[in-house]
Image (cartoon, rainbow, N blue to C red; front, side, top):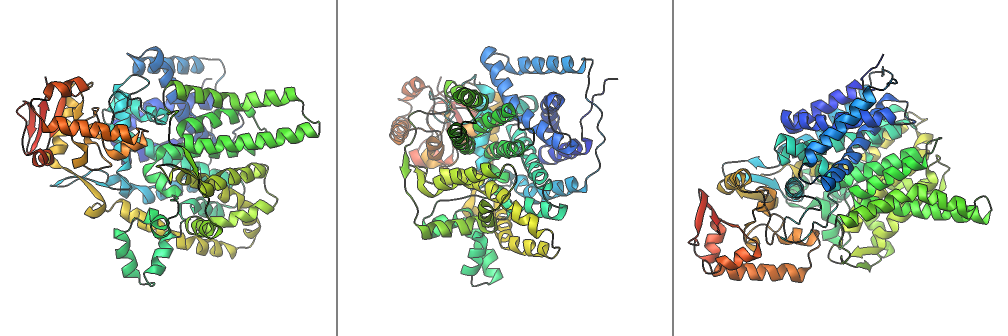
Amino acid sequence: MRVFSFPNPVFYGLLTLGLLIFSGFPATAATLLWLLPSAYLVHRFLPGERDPWTRSVVSTLLALGLFPLLWAFCSLLFPRAPLMVTAVLLLCTLLGVILKTTSPQPAHPRFSPSLILLFLLLLLLTWLPFSRIGRSTPEGNLYRAYFSSDYLKHYAVVETLSRDSLPPGNPYFLGKPLHYYWLPYLFPTAVSRLCGSPEKSLFAWSFLVNFLALNLLFLHLRKRLPLPWALALATAPFLCSWEGFLHLIRSNLRWALFWEGSRNLNIDGLTRWLYGLPQIDTLYRSLLFTPQHLLSLLFLLLYLHWEGSPKRNPRALSLVLALSLLSSFFVGGFLLLTAAVQFLFVSLRGLIQKRLTWRSVLRNWALLFVPSVLSLVLASVLKMVNPQGSPLLFSPLTPGQAARLLLLNFGPLLVGLIGLFLKGEKEAPFLRFLVLCSLLPLLTLRIVGFESDISLKAGLVLAVALLFLSLPLCQRLSQHPWTFLLLLLFLLPGALTTAIDLRNSSDTSNRRFTLLVPKDEAALWKWIRKNTPKESVVQTFPPLREEVLSESASFGGRRLYVGDRMHGAIFQIPKEEYHGRIQVLESLLASLPESRSALRRLGVTHLFWGARERERFGMVPPLKRVKKIGDALLLGLD
């Protein structure tokens, strides 16, 4: 008898409930329509995972990573109808598998309270910040800077992928390709195409990645430690920063001064502001605003999971290595570097000891690294990378600076360094290489113009490596019941930073760190998205607006001739070229209406003229008024 079932209905039930809470019914339905068939297909052919809970997590994660490749393939071959072709291919493959004579055995997993606890923990950590993204007030919509403002970039990327064929254009810089690791955004793009809301599709995607992260982390720990220890250690990467504890000390241990003072403090960059050190983030901040990097880190976790498996499968490892790289060139790059260093070390040792031949080394290299090479080729073909990007700078920290940086940002995880000298599990050698390949770049390398980019991503990788290196020590301590209280006490100082992050990321009443999109302008951007052609170029004057926000790309879903300064840098536009466009735009806007034809030649089709533009240029240009809402005007250039 054929049975159509997933191995853990509780897992998918909680996943559906969380999607409903974070994104509402339309986005939940769209997410499940794409995810469940993909996950079922992966689950059907997934080898080596007997535990129903683990099998569900791994199947869903691989489906989330493989779906964008299917979408990209369909989009490149059928640019006019990628949505329909993707759905047809997925459905046909699904029906073909279901109709086979063999079928998956029904699963009867034991009910696990730990799964419920992880779900509740995720709600506790993330629901309030997500519920405040774009909070509507009589003045307008609010976006907390440093936290939810990251989603403004996510909106723009999804809108671009929904509008453009592949490779997509740069929404902030007309005529340029989008140099960014945008491939994982194709999943929320597919969801957005069905539900019509980039915001809700991104909330659904974020919850999905976050839910998988907590589950995979816990499952990896549960194999080696008793339940209370596994649950507590699963929170350690989210509670490792002692920056909040440092702030408490600087507040003379006065709680009221500490708590109120942290409202006006950019706590996630405290060591950077105080000591001029590189910035490092916790995994908690990835839960809040960088799902693409967290997704890449999940494939790193899966690599670790399979690296230590008794039936180590090089093909499976090569797949997750490539998926991690395509999700984030930074995080996946550290994994690729580590795998390459380990492979080189093992191969040279095997050749010297004559246990390996050159032929076997080349075969092993092809099995492990060819998908990653093809991924880099794909990234180049799709113009995700800029070969003329910013150069690397060798800038090593002094021993004192390194000690301060590591202690304040990793706190209790530094006990993992003891694991470098203890006998560990089968994946322990790989973990030692992972520490080496993430720690050294963190302490010595910078990217010119992006001084913290390496440290931010290397810090995520190092946190995971240190956590798993601490397991041999934790296994020994867990034999003594009283040591669990010691573990909780050790994690307590880091809870201060997490509490500040949780409060600050949802504190839109603090206008010092909050972006305000006026109500009239927000309403006009919504109208623009629904009523103007998708190929329109709706231009504002960026220097008058937030340097981290281009409303046209994020809310209107339309391109700009030139956008805000920060995203010009992030998407690898040279400073000289960016400022050149700003100067040209300013001159032409000041010369309206005579310069209308010149703006059209640049590709601009509409001008967004708000109160700030009117005050800066001292006029409302006598151009066609396409739409007016309050003080906000949309002007046409035809």
